[in-house]
Structure formats: C-alpha cells, structure tokens
Image 1 (cartoon, rainbow, N blue to C red):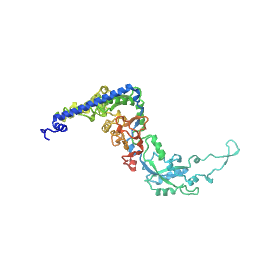
Image 2: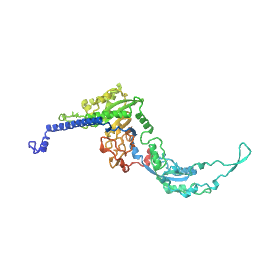
Image 3: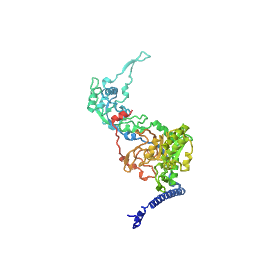
Image 4: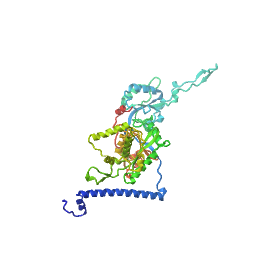
Length: 541
C-alpha cells in the first residue's frame, strides 16, 4: 500500500498511520503511559479496598500463621537420596556370628567396594521388616533348642568360709542372654553370584554338619537396601522400617553439615538481644517490596541483606523490586521519547547486590580504593567511554525510596571484603535463575525466602511433577557440586506444613502455581539418577 493512498476503514487507517515514524512513536508513548497509569490506579484502588476492609471488619483478614525454617534439599540429595541397591543376607545362629563374618571377609573379594557403613552388619530379628524375616522355619526353631550335651548339670562346690559342701546352680551361660539367631548383611549382589556364595557358606560351620551339631538351614535372601547414608533421623527411621536397620551419623554427604544448619537456625530463629531475626528481616523485605509495588515500580518482591560480625548483626542493604521503573533509552535520538518495562536488572536481588557493591567501594580502605580506581581507568585507556547516567539507569542499584536510602547511606559494612561474602539474604520470594546465580557469584552465606516459586525459582532442587503441574524446576542452585560456591538455604513455611515437595504452594499472588496436595501418590520422577555403584564408591568417602 502506498503512503499516498488513503485507506478505507478505521483499522486500515491506523495501519496506514503506523507507517509514519511520528505516529508510531506517539502510539508507543500512549500505550506505555496508559499502562503506567492503570498500574497506579489498580494499586491505589487495592490499597483503599484493603484499608476499608480493615476498618469495617478486623476479622476479615486472619492473622498470619506461625512459620519455621525448613532447610532445602540439595540437587544431589534429590537425585541420589532415594537410590537403592540389592544385597545378600543370611540368617545364622548368633554364637557363630564372628566365625561366619570372618569366612565372608576371607572369601568374598571386593565386598567393601561399595560403602554401606550406614547399614548395620548384623541385625536382630525384632528390628527387621516382615518381608525380610519371611516365614519361620521349624528346623531353625529346633536348632535353637539346647541339646543334652550342652546343658550344664548341678555342681557340688565348697563355700569359701566353711568346710560344708553344698549344691549350687552355676551362672547362666552368656549365649542365653542374646537372641538365638542374627541376620547378616553379606555383600551387594553384584559382587558375587548366589551359586558361588552358597558354595562358600555351605562348607563352613554352622551350615555344615559336625560331630557336635547338625547343619543349620542355609537360606540366602536378596533384599533391597538404601545405597547412600540418610540425612536425618526421620529418614533413618523410615529406612529402618522399610529396608534394613540404618544408622544416622549426623552428617550429610550431599550438603551442609547438620551441626552448621542447626547453629544457623538457632541464630536466625532465636536471635540475641538487639540482633535482627528472620521474622523482622522478612517483614522489612515485605515492606520495601510492597512500597515499590504501590508506586507501580515493581512486582512486590523485597530483599534484605544482613552482615553478622562477632555475633552482632547489621542491615547492609534493603531493596524492593523495581523492574517496572520507567527508563529512558539513551542509545539513539530516535528512541529518546520511548520507554521500556520489565528491566531484568530491577529485580530485588540484583538491586540489593549492586547496593552492597557500591557500599563496598565507599567503605574500602585506601589501597582497595586505589585498585578499584585503577581498574576503572583501564576502560578509559582502552577507548571505552563510561556513561554513568546510563549505567545507573540500567543497573538500577541506587535507592529509589526513603526506606532504601535509610540503610544505603550507613557505612556499616566491614571494609575490604568480597561483595556479599558470607552475608545473609532474606527474600520475600524464591529468586529466579538469574538472581540465584548472582547469589552464587556474590558468595553469600545464608539465604531464607518465604514464598516458593515453582515455575521460576532457581534454588529448590525438587524436579517432580503431579497433576497440578511442576513442583519445581529442579535447578538447586544453592548447593551444586558443579559450582565453585555453595550456601545454605531455607524456606520459611507455616508450621502446619511438612516441608516436602507435595505440600500446597503458599504463594498468594500466583494462584495457578499451587500444588495439589492430594496428588502426592502420583509423583513421578522427571530425571533419573545418572550414577553407578562403582562411581559412587569412588565418590563417597
């Protein structure tokens, strides 16, 4: 269509006008201005409605339930934590336990190539699941009955203080105090075949006949046991009830040490006097995020960064989401009158980390300040011009509210540290993949978030699905062995929730991201563990 030809109809006329740059820029400005004012009106109307509700009925808004910290599972914990392997077991008389174990160690090569030290080698029948015990054998029961030559008759003995001889019953033999039989975990099934193992045990007592006793029935069973060590007491108890008696050694081969987790939870949930706790920090993060949302600048997420030095805490940075803050393009004259929305650098985490970086430079000693100035001068020597106004507008890491300015202007950061090294991050929502990786690069120490984001979050490691959709993306960025930094991470959930992947989502803003708690039996693994027994044996120490 030629520009000179007048179109017919309103839609054709608008398309014809869009060919002219002036009308195109005007339409873009009107669209962004209309959206901006609609956001402001929507937020103001929501605030007025909520205020009226609070005035009219105090019972309309129920109090928020008490919450507690639940440490997130790591990626390795989700991939390998439920792995099992097959092993051989055998039941034997308890008095022959040491002898049979010596036979196993001498004749079964490579039995320790797979680390199963979290499992008991010998187990009493009363601690075994029913499917491991099986049906009782009458022959085995008869073997436990003492024979005539094994019973000890009464003895005639002389008292130590008199010359009178009297009858006395000797003390009971030691073996009567222990169970008649024990179950022995022999070795993984891949180490030796059933036929070879049967041939070895059949040649030794008690499975071979002798002059003193008949042969004990040899029955070798194949059972399933957990491959890796449990990471909690509850998990050890569950595995003991379903598989085989299992130890919990207060360690976690897949993540942070339980003692470190317990210490952190105590410091955060039971803060000392004048120290900030998890409740206060998350309330501050929610306030700064809500302030920016009401102004039409962000989505409502907030971030608070705290430094803990010698037991005392200081709030270093407070930032709310500002992704919708209008930013003028300065890259060309034709775009000077246009605006953009959704600046990814306006996420609360990115802004807070940027504020910490600015404060680091401000609090740095003279030597560090000189090094930073020298590094910046290299840009000018290379012919790269630095537009500070454009940089500040893009990274959006300067305060935009009084609350953010209040904490930004305080020089309370320990000098000469690396960015966010071992700092504590409090978030209203689980960060996205970009922000999660920024936390890794910033070397943070602890992260606590309140609302899980199943469709966008990058910290949770569960990678399962149910009828209602994905439970999580499964990235687990907080603790991955492929990365050069790991940090502890918690979800702050109501005490009524169990902290599992099947619990109902608590995000108030994203109704479609809630899980279906009734679909917990329909969970299906998306990714199977890519690990072999031999590779684990070389990895696990």
